[in-house]
Image (cartoon, rainbow, N blue to C red):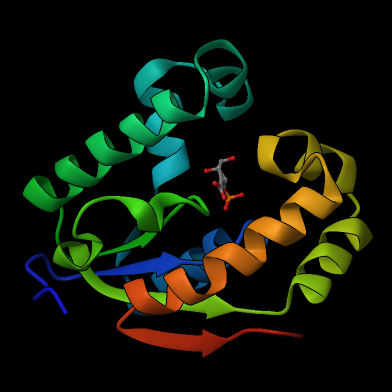
Length: 159
Ligand code: S3P
C-alpha cells in the first residue's frame, strides 16, 4: 500500500453513490473545504463532462483526471476531495490522502438515482450511465478495484 503524502480525505466510489454529498456534509462538520475533481476538470477546460466525452473521448477525460490528481498532490492539503467514479484509476491515488471507498449495491445506487426528482438530469450528465446493463457490468468490474485502491470502506447503502 502506497504511503499517503498529502493530508486530504479522498472519497471514491461508483457514480451516484453520494461522494459529493458526503464531501459537502463532512466539510460542513469539520470546517474543511471540499473540492470535487469533476468540477475542477469542468472549470479547467470550460466544458461539461458530457461534452468532454463526446468531443474528445474517455481517454482524454482520464488524462484530465490524472492532471487533476497531480495538481492536488502538489498543492492541496487538509481538504475533502470528492471524485468522479473512475478517478480511483489515477496513479498512486493514496498519495493524495486517506482514500475512503463509499459502498452501496448497484441496485440501491440505480434505484436512488431513478427516484431523485432530477433523475433525468443526473443520468444525462453521466456518459457511462446511459446503458443500464453496461453500467452494471462496469460496477462489477470496478468493485474489487475500488476496494484495492482504498484505505477504508464505508457502507452508505440506505443512508
Ligand atoms: C465517471 C463518473 C462521473 C464522471 C464521468 C466518469 C466514471 O462522476 O467523472 O462521467 O467513470 O465512473 P460521478 O461518479 O460523480 O458520477
